[in-house]
Length: 179
Image (cartoon, rainbow, N blue to C red; front, side, top):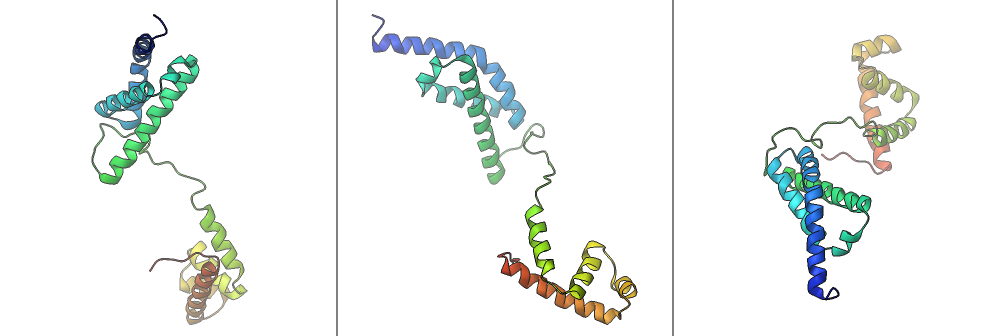
């Protein structure tokens, strides 16, 4: 009786065993690279296979689609665990994981740069000039005074009012600094 629910259940169980034999080790290596801990990697693989069992229609998918689904689920579980563990400080890893490595993001300060450029454009020439010298060229008050041929007290005064105007210009763009 091939059409019975028991026969279908056994067919799915055999198929899951095949998938387990074929994908458990590659999934384990993948998860271990992500989380850096073999015990947690085993748990991720087990949860991935459990989720597959809960979606039996996936067992009949082509191998490439099934493989893609398995590795996507394992990756998402690993990332979830790393985020959760990082938030709760519940684990230490055997080695640095791929996620924990610092990567410079070239776009990280882009929004800040745009806000500052727009705010600087609203300043008077004299105020913008002292800001550029002080913060972009890292010049001292004395060096700015010498270069601009103005007294050091004037540099300090312009810098004070320029920063205040810059703060207001940023606030007008919706950007504020928490006190």
